[in-house]
Figure 1: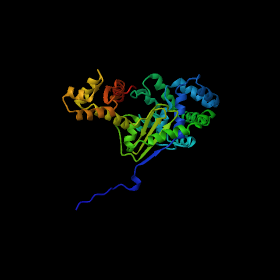
Figure 2: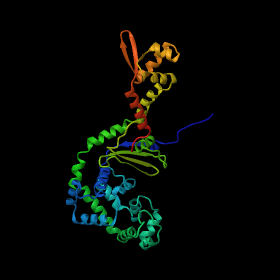
Figure 3: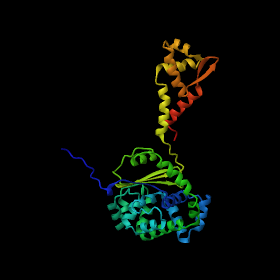
Figure 4: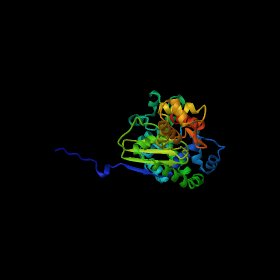
Length: 343
């Protein structure tokens, strides 16, 4: 006798959640404004007026010394999973150890061991192998300044973010997003896929690195516009997608194209279209041209008509058929755009 059982307990079941996140919107809002650094932008101008002196000075120093994007804040979501309270999220970041803080700050691109060594001795940076974070002498100088003044840097960094989160500019913008976000959530939830397949579908690619994720979070963002991002570790996969990023169920579209192409998947039907592209004809004449029975021609014409490639016109008691060129051209264009969409 053989036995088979599922060894996973209920605690191991996969959790899938779809929700709108204030923290995600805060990160996206901060990134969209502070990364652009455009004082002509209305919201950016309003935000600058609301920052206190210390936050404004920190932002000025940040802008003068770095070209880093604030999107790296998404990296902290895994270790600080407070999706609905910005203050708690920032408080948790502020309690991280220096190595943990810098590990996520650098987008997990540097080994924790190397980070710990650099914190102990920032001078080691001078002989360290170049990375995207310090590929020039200027960038090395900036990183070294951060390492030398890490407590003050962290304090100024968190203060700027907290100041931004409490600004009227952010709160007013956030108040208008619930309906837009819910529409996106409903659209994504309506796509019937397993969570990993759905995650890859939203991202538009097959993941090279995957795991047996226990938790999936699917989060729409108004401020993330048409972008998509995945943050993950061995247990959790977070998919953040902009509400402007069109999510089309390509399986439905491919099924529609399948019907169209099946109508063309017969040499006699292709010959019929070639004949009808020149003149209107009736069934008996088409049968004579192809050397097949009128009953078979009627079957082919019915399929072509249902697919839209043929139009029917009755003159007296005789049915004449003609080639629907507009539909054929539209179908071929849809096929091309589906297979090779314009970016």
